[in-house]
Length: 197
Image 1 (spheres, rainbow, N blue to C red):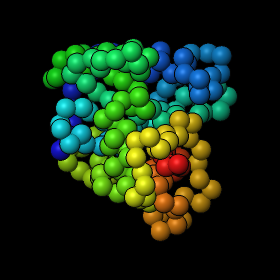
Image 2: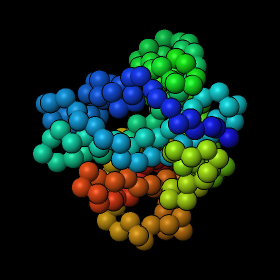
Image 3: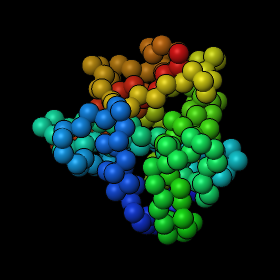
Image 4: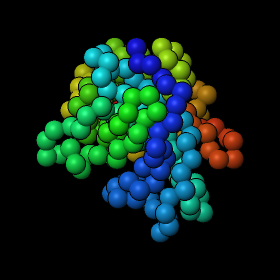
């Protein structure tokens, strides 16, 4: 199980995402720099214990209507190799306990995509974002045995479900992950975060 450290990161994840998010083709920018607040998410464990995996939900409040984005991130102790690594890099940060961390877009990181596939198959357990070794019961998974890294889709721009209280694993199509976030006004929402096929 991954250990969640109560420490600092410089720059912070939100600072790195403020620079990175507007460069993404799926960003619905308002023409101004993003104003991001952390709104939710969960973690997954790397079976090898080397890569931190977080599925973070941020809300951009810069426009007239807030927009929720999901950014899966890999936290690594060394840079990834390969020509795609530079495009996947969100940035580097100094972790108060672990030293320099390379933060990558999880959609392009092989460890993250493998663990997302395991989650969608029902063989990985979502963990609370800020607690070590603590499953997150608010994440709903309808498993699909066909889930593989190549057919897992990450929902980037999140849309609230119409009837979130009625969503459980028995009522979702197989291969779906639903989780919640909090809007800046304090209201909560739940929506689809990942799918297969």
